[in-house]
Length: 141
Image (tube, rainbow, N blue to C red; front, side, top):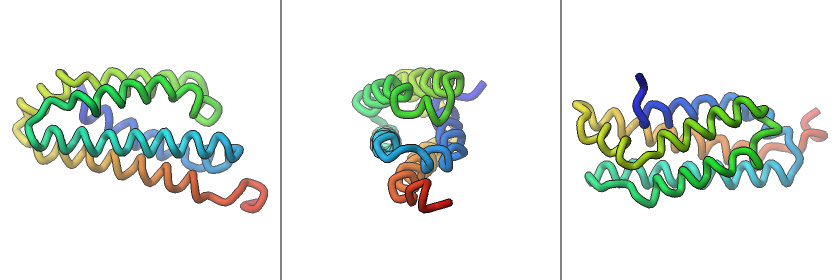
C-alpha cells in the first residue's frame, strides 16, 4: 500500500497528464487552475522542508487539505467528475499530517521520501507554469 508521500507523487504525475486539456481551457479557468496548482506546489515544498527538519507539517498539510476542496471548481471540466473526485480525495487523505510524519519518521530512506515530495512539487509547478503561459486555443490551432 502506498504511503502519503507516494500518493502525493502519484497525484502530481497524474495531473501533468492533463496539461493539454488545461492549456486549452478558457482564460479564466486556466488562471484559476494555474493559481491552484502553484499553491499546491508551494505547500508540497514546505511539507518536504518541514519533514526534512523533523517537524510535524501542520500548515502545509492544512493548506493541502484546503486545496483539495478547490479541485472541483478549478479542474472538473478538464479532469471529469470521477477523476476530479479521485484526485481531490487522494490529496486530502495523503495530507494527513500525522500519517505523513509517521511515514517519514519510520522510513529507512528519508531522502527518497523527501525527493518524491520535491519532485511532486516541481511537476505541479511545471503544470501551473505550462497552463499559464500556454497560447490561447485559437492561436494554437
